[in-house]
Image (cartoon, rainbow, N blue to C red; front, side):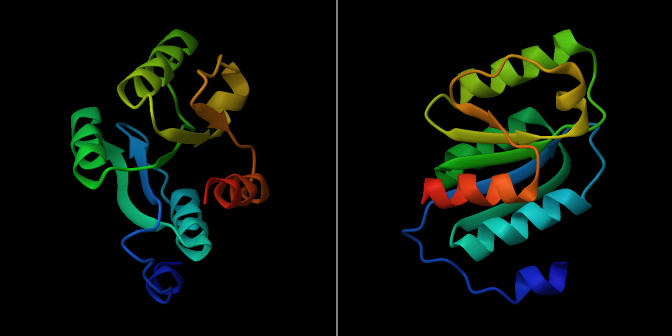
Length: 134
């Protein structure tokens, strides 16, 4: 997967910017790498932060690179209340940014998604969301 990602051309500096990360205590990276590949192949300028990223670090990178899109996955999420609070915080802190989320924990809990957060269930839907965002 890493070789395939590295083999893709860099998007121009003017392309929309996507940041991909996993929240703290989320340690599953393979799906996020695949989403990184799809985002870069679609023509987005991507910034891959990896797994278990503290919120303050995410915020710093989003502000530094002026992200247009944030992509994350929650598979081993905490309680429904804590997960909803995390989604609400993402939405509030990054109100002008499109946020795409996926993961088993979200399917299980079925939270309410703020207006700028879109849940995607599979890679085909994610690809459609990316194409609509360019």
